[in-house]
Image 1: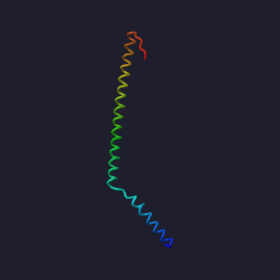
Image 2: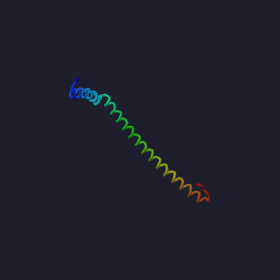
Image 3: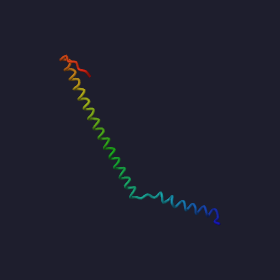
Image 4: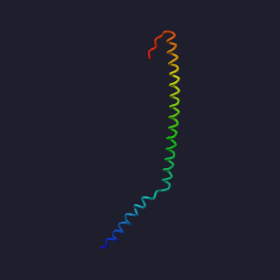
Length: 85
């Protein structure tokens, strides 16, 4: 029969080895993960920039349409034509 303190040490060492080996990360895998995260960040920034450009273009088109709508309404008023909106 193994004494209790010695049994605890043996069990502790047996449990400690897998726990410590799980803490060690593969440097190659870590570098690949960091590269993927960098690429993901770049892609998100690119999408933000494209969204901002599309928003600006849409706002410009809305202003142009509003000006054209005003011009058409004024021409219709001058000529007496009824415009249905």
